[in-house]
Length: 275
Image 1 (cartoon, rainbow, N blue to C red):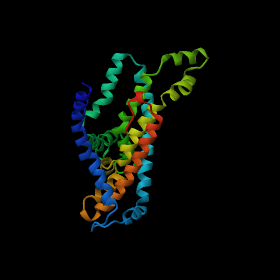
Image 2 (image 1 turned 90 degrees about the vertical axis):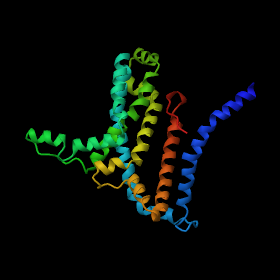
Image 3 (image 1 turned 60 degrees about the vertical axis):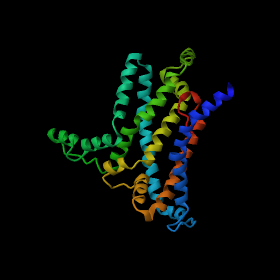
Image 4 (image 1 turned 120 degrees about the horizontal axis):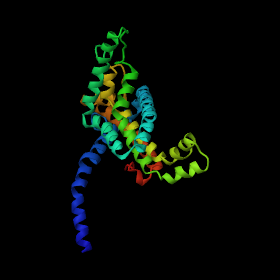
């Protein structure tokens, strides 16, 4: 009976294994292959050596991603705390309001935000009617960061919300019995105990922020060349596939490092573990 069950389990795992091989292992193999070969297919490390000329792009992308992640944390933690402390019925309403924009494609959300913030958009039209001078937002670094925060904020809120809801209230009662006020309880008890959720949220925001390209193209007005934009441009032409693969390889390494950090500080109960 045990052997029959094992065979059924293996058969059930076949579609998943095929999916992994076709859409994870094979693309990784091709990225590594193109990164270490030239146009004739010969082995070379020149593609990796050329990455030094893209150092400013990596630096700018990391800075934008870090700033967007910091804003998401500053906004997301209080929001997650308020949601976790609300009544169950209100928690459901707040969760729906948080997730509602995620039901819409990221492309549509970003384009809609660009329409609102453009020179002739709703915001500037309102400012003009109120007698204020219009402001230029689209085409600035602030607009790119705003787009990242708007699109990826739920990824920060959800793991922190899960951590806070699973927090044992007896710790809070013990802190109150020992004389801690609300601020002391927050920084000495709640924040340390919800660190796994914070690390998961930071990683889940940082990874898509550093690899995005559509947000920077639309809200940046073409003034900012990030890693995602560079990779997309390199893969438009067969002659530059190898450079694009080398940049993608470095990107994968950065993402794997981020995931390793998250797995190091997360626990299995947070639902934030990634492999």
